[in-house]
Length: 503
Image 1 (cartoon, rainbow, N blue to C red):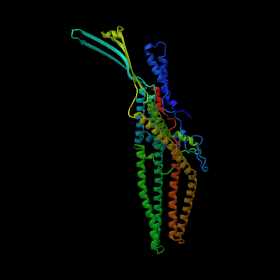
Image 2: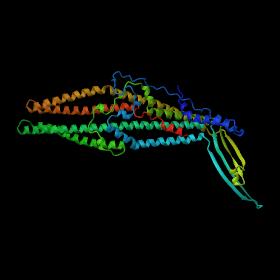
Image 3: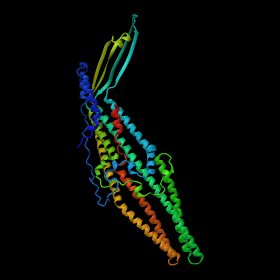
Image 4: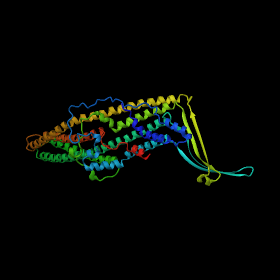
């Protein structure tokens, strides 16, 4: 197994190595040797247990023999496909872009990332000594009447803890992993937002289609109702036929009112997701063709790609954070050594300090603190850290299992959706022919109106089901892309890299 802490220690190790190289040069004075030795010792490893990735309790492959071969970007993994390559409709691309810039929920998540980043930097500062420079003066008069003046210029560090047992490094690693977890959470939030906007956009399109279908059905039902009323006046049809014609007409009218409400609510939901006002030209008021909205994604991929999903990586970083906290809890059992030191110049004349005529002054004050008795606090902290590690280990493994289940469920739907679409299209064609024939037979006095009415209801229901199935097909493609971790290619840990460059 790979020790995943090695790469994260690299920035700190570089700093310590550079410090060692600088301090061990021959020009170092003998007075700095104790400090040099302490800093060299501080380069030892932490007391955190080695981290090894847990063996995931899922299969290596999705066992779905019926998964159809997908087209398009089949040679790539979804996680490598930027969302702008996956979404093909420019209207939807524009809406998602606006959402990524303006969504308040996403801003809240990104603020959490910045907070975690700041906390990590605060903790990391404990790895380095705090240097202060001071200039002071003193003028006093003794009881003898003599007046004395003194000036001092000094530089020094105060209470710098020599991290011999890696406590501060463990705490820094813990905060860094917490920060990385929040960054992965932000990536997951972006993927979720992309999927939610795309699904809401398609829902609006599908509901608009259903509204148009209800209006068309109401128009046809009104014509049929007029025919039965005229035939009633001629004594051909009965009032039962008129009442039957009215049922489908008013049912369609009811559907029109319901779908109009749903369309307005869909637009409101999109506004909330996007976070700002947008031009209605960006909306779809009819479902576009399946291949004109999104690109198909590969289905027959290894389940190991789930380890790169942002939510899984976030859970893993949280586990690593608790792993590092164990190191800090272990280090608390050992002595704490602090160093206070300063050096400078002193003179009774201020100008001599800057001209070289002053005397040198210095002081070194190391201190050591050894825990003897604290009522079991250190033991309790260690037990708590170990329990937290087990908690986050279970959370990490559950995240992997949940990710596998999501992909397996989505692939199961993907395997059958095309068969359902084909059958639904055939049903619409058959029910349409049946309605047209039964209506013609009714108008020619061959069949009763009840046969035509039943055919019309079957056709209406079949067309509704076709619309919802087409929406389900597009939603399934978007969901598959999302659960495979797509949408955030090339955006890994940029903030940590920036921090390393700055420092």
